[in-house]
Image 1 (tube, rainbow, N blue to C red):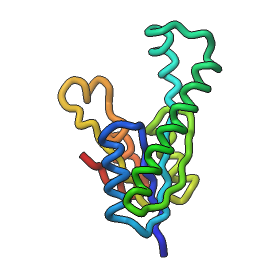
Image 2 (tube, one colour):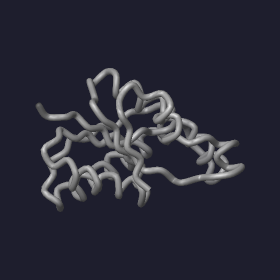
Image 3 (cartoon, rainbow, N blue to C red):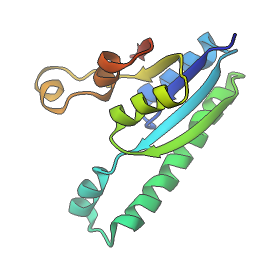
Image 4 (cartoon, rainbow, N blue to C red):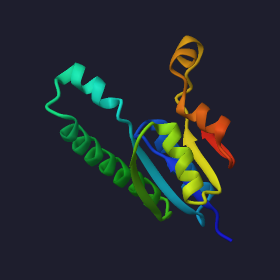
Length: 142
């Protein structure tokens, strides 16, 4: 039986490493690469650049997410692994955990930003939340 793996992907170096890890260690798995568009980004963009409206922001963020997923799929294809991609909107940890439940995922493989100290305490970590709450095994790639 083929395992269904989920790789949350945000375009960071560590999420790229997670894709490479899955492609190399689980070449026969059914792999889904998930990019979560975090709506809190609209606040940051409005402060930094001004914002015409939330719909424009969401369209741009979704297009960027689709490009990121295509990049991740290419990384996997370069090592001979075929993947599917998905883009969802919401708080990343919550969306990842819902995706696991809704799609019968067997294993999550994700990168960690390796935060420590005050930044980890204040900001938390998507990887940490997923590890603590996931009903399936989670591999964190550093």
